[in-house]
Amino acid sequence: MGLIVHQELIDKEKAEILVNLCPFNAIAYDGNKLDITAACKSCRMCVNKGPSGCITFEEDKIRKDEKDEYKGILVYADCNSGKIHPVAYELLGKAKELCKVINHPLYALMIGHNLENEAQSLLEYGADRVFVYDDEKLKDFDVESYTDCLADFIERYKPSSVLVGATNLGRCLAPRVAARFETGLTADCTKLEMKENTDLVQIRPAFGGNIMARIVNPNRRPQFATVRYKVFDKPLKSEVHGEVINLEVKKEWLETSQDIIEVINKPKEEDIAEAEVIVAVGRGLKSKSDLDMVNELADLLNASVACSRPMVENGIFEAKYQIGLSGKTVKPKLIITLGISGAIQFTSGMKSSDCIIAVNNDPNAQIFDVANYCVTGDMYKIVPDLIKKIREGK
Image 1 (cartoon, rainbow, N blue to C red):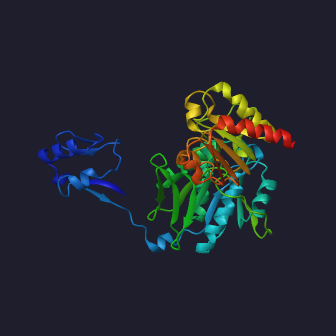
Image 2: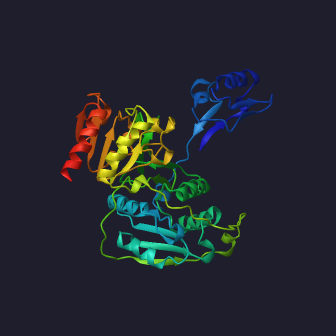
């Protein structure tokens, strides 16, 4: 699949036209051969505007019988330090919905050591079968060994779609495996849909959040997608009807180019993605000293304090407190936004919250489009009044 150069049609004049036509300087000509370099962005300008037939774009077409070989949806359960990341349960809930559309089984996969108890919990959340690669040398994440294990499963069981949590480990592992199978991967999906022909519709913000892209990979299997924590709902436990299957770990998979000498766990920090109540502040904050007012409100509500992107860019907050496309996705029971305009870059990361209260002095602020309760006014007047009423109520 890709751009094909038909060298027999290329002469000096046509080559010069193509070289000058490419907006990315990705076409080179040495007098004998025309090459497309790694700078190519597949814009197809050379195909559509260049000399006819010199460069063509050809897509691989997967045969229907070949597509039918791929059955099931696989959820990779990130199990670092012997504990499953909760995004795996959320993915199982969504995958179960997708499986019903195409009547496919739901698989879960774990890689690590001493995983029996955790594997059983995946069955409780809907997996039909849980596959485990268990070895003492897999206790700590090694991207080469883990890639071999996941690739082995795909080759043996041929899942049609693979869902991976957008954790630090998942973001490292998924692209590597997708590249091995020469298939596509859509990162940080906010919505997933399934067609009856097993094509996975992967939806995510694009162009800075100005559009929602619907991405389909009809000619390759498996289809890979990563999803952030808190995007989907965690399902309820169900009756266990599946089984845990242990798979062989081959010795050569454990012989990698890197040795893990020591694993040092970082001290546990506050994670706004886990917060049930959040007070978020944006451009409406005039100075860093005014955070005292915001922190006081948060303390009264037993809430975490978060922010929009400008607050990080201005050095008022660390990046770990940012909500949005380039920050974290949150789904608290209550979020109060103060002086945040509500661009999609922000709202994409919090619009699934149970209750949204927005305070903004602009009655046309975008944040009001997603809020359950809209308060038009100056946060510097509203927040002190709110603090006073909460204190009186207590």
